[in-house]
Image 1: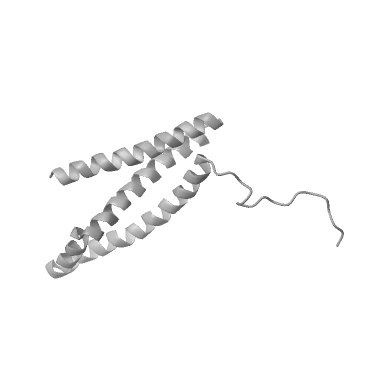
Image 2: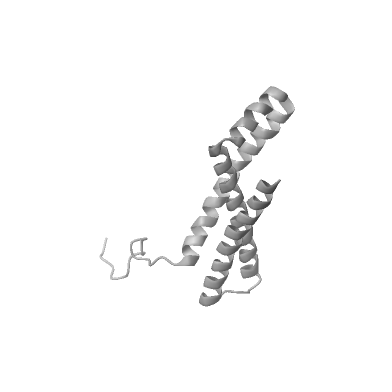
Length: 127
């Protein structure tokens, strides 16, 4: 086969990381985390239907420190995925496609996810 003088496809070592690139990968990862969280929700609903002993087991797992951390992470993933999904919908409509706009909207998504999660958990823990 003859040797061609054309550039090779760039790899991750060549790309310089950008916020939008990292947020895109994080959007996919949070989608996977939400799918895994649905398994936990199914476990909770099944235990609710099975009776008090099964529900007590699930409740003990949820109320443990690890369970609280998992629920906090699930909330963060849910709010991030929601905000970034809205951002993608706006992009589909043609808004915010410039480099600076995409960067700023990425910061808004991160801020919404972080502050929204903290505020939601403050309300949850207050009751």
